[in-house]
Length: 275
Image (cartoon, rainbow, N blue to C red):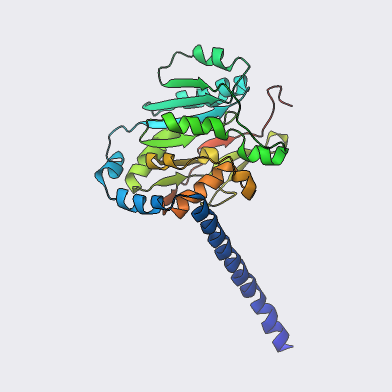
């Protein structure tokens, strides 16, 4: 009987060890995938660059430029009245907003041209990206082509992203600029509010920088990482495109830090009609 009690008591410890081993294997697998995907010279380049004046000077700028990238396709109302509005209304003013259309055919271009703000740039691509037909696989990489174009033209010292139906809290960028400069890390991430059934909101704490805990609009990073593209092949790993990219940041040795406050709202995906 005593032996059975001791065995039962040890069971939770065995479970914890098992979970720890699984987590270690997941990290090893992500590293293997990233090594396959990336040009290995990047690993050497970043270690050299991180100690250079060119890399470090963004942390000392009094008012660094922040680039916000939004990819969009025929969601004019949500884009203009929610996403774009939340960026241009930020308390931090030194930003550029790059919106790239995935060959939009609705009123997106006309509506954005009516916004008189020199910080806003809109590019509408002449052809849509080529995405998988399967709805789930398509979801993983939809928008890759326009966000890739946005990364080619950004000028900011720091870069961040937003889905076209989500919104930042008003002081998000101001708080993150201050925090990343104080801590001198490569990447920040933060909690966020997620819309659930019946329009209820759930706080996602996002305690770790890992798959399922970070999303497109919850990450803020040094401009060097714009050289890591969003990949159209992310779905082949059954990975969302954002995490496929962010795991490569980790592989390259990016220093990361969690900002403790929720700073954006992630809405349930809906059509323009709300259905």
